[in-house]
Length: 116
Image (cartoon, rainbow, N blue to C red):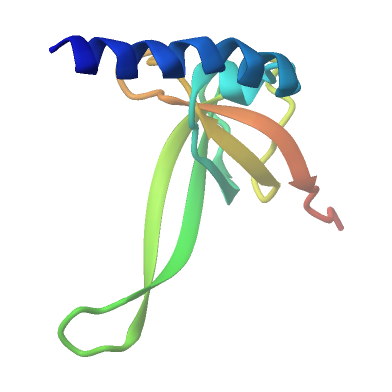
């Protein structure tokens, strides 16, 4: 047992040397909150106040037929300034629950729809 104590004390003495040698990186917002998914989709509805409905389309492999099929998901995302309109491509990010259905936040505009 005395042998195990002696072995466990050696790595503890080496740990401060390693900590001093490793550079410390500042935490960014993403690191501070952990991993949050980001998706890009099209705004399909902006009729609610401070909320947009974003449709995200992706291709997924069907497990039975081994064929790529189109999947559509719609997310309600928070838009504080009501600046995004129908047709805009936006990026949304996971967020804490804002309301019963809203768990996403619009982070940026990818492309504005062309009005004719």
